[in-house]
Image 1: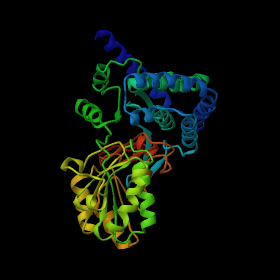
Image 2: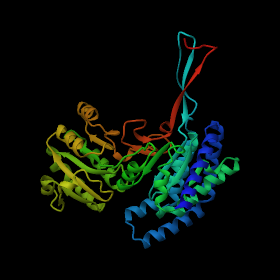
Image 3: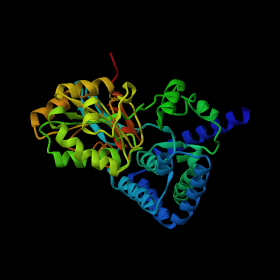
Length: 419
């Protein structure tokens, strides 16, 4: 345990020192590093995929679920998407050094509110290697240092991606600790990092509910979190049904293992007999299981009866809970009871109903006539996201560059003293 303590302390200490340098970098210097990462990702595709194959072989041996293996896999297209995400971050406005407000006091003091980096950010995550690059690029652009602690199932993939960032940092004589990677897989290391409030300024856990709750419970450092992604879509009686069909199938089936995939569909009872048979054919074709209330099972005889625990459940799989509701208020009440404040949506042509839904559903993202799958930093134009927060303090929803900045007050005078 002594050597583990030393290792963790050393990583945090070096990251803290690096953050003092990264905080002073100009936009041009930060973008140079990011564009070099893009170039190296293109050159290193083969090596990255080879390392990813090592993780995939081990995942098969460990009999991980198909959903987890999908999240772990780096196809050529996904590496291109990673590269595109870094390019997008490089193109974004620098969030640091912005003057948010400036005013003058009667005594002549000039006060400015100016954005600054947070410092050192610890990211604890599972499965998805693309998180490595997303977090590294966002932290670099926002002048923060990052400590990346990925899951053991993606160890070699993550290490390959961090190597790319280290090559880019080295080229411009910047500390490698601007992007640190935890090379020990001992779970006790996480507990040790979470106690270093003097060196680490923010913790962002990305993964399953058990991981996030463990981190939030054990941390002395502020934590950005969302526990679950129990996302709903309500199909109103005044919905455009072909549009509703496309949205529902996309929200559930495009990538069901993501936190912004729909888990429960609410359908107005007046259109259920017209809508559900068509939707059901699409779901069956996609291999999606349905767990429905009594009316849903009457319309779709092949559906399984939903149990009470299926409402408010994050399946992260090709399983969808469906409930018919008598009106908009019943749909809102269901979401208020079972939702996780992540992402919920309505499909309707009635603008007043849409407005009522938006006003009363208190989720970090509320969709009107759009798939819940858009609840994502890249899709919101953030370049990428560092995480998603369902809290209301500091950051909420997909958290991009702006969420990685704090501010300080700069007060300028000409000899004033307080009487």
